Image 1 (tube, helix red, strand yellow):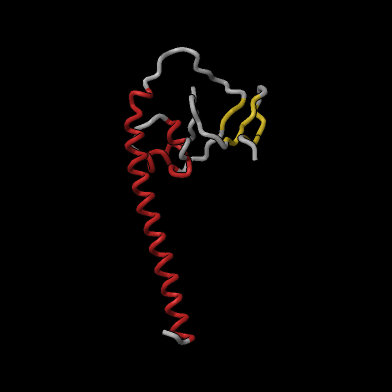
Image 2 (cartoon, one colour; image 1 turned 45 degrees about the horizontal axis):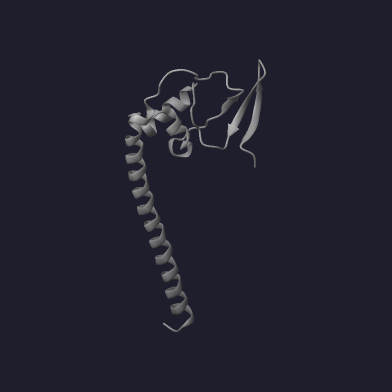
Length: 128
C-alpha cells in the first residue's frame, strides 16, 4: 500500500487524497461540522495543534484527507509549537498508562477464560 490514495479530482488541478503517514507542518485546515463536533466531543478542551489530533484520527473519530498539491504553504514566521510540546508529552504518558491498564485487563480476561475453559473440559471429560 502506498502512502496516499487518490479519492477524487478537484477543480484547478488538485486531488483529494487519503493519507497514511504522520501529519506534520500543516499550514492550513478546513474542518467540516462533523469533524468540529467530533473534536469538541472527544478532545475538548483543545490543548494541542490540530496535527496532533489528525495523527490520532481513530481516537478522535476524525476522517481526514489532504489536498495535493498543497494549496497553502508556510514559508515565513516563527512557530511556538515546541514551547507547548510538554502538554503533548504529558498526554502521551497518560494515554500510555491507560493502554497498559487496558492490556492488563485484556490479558486477565483472556487468561481467565482460557483457565475456565480448561476447568470446563476437565469437568465434562474427567480428570478434575
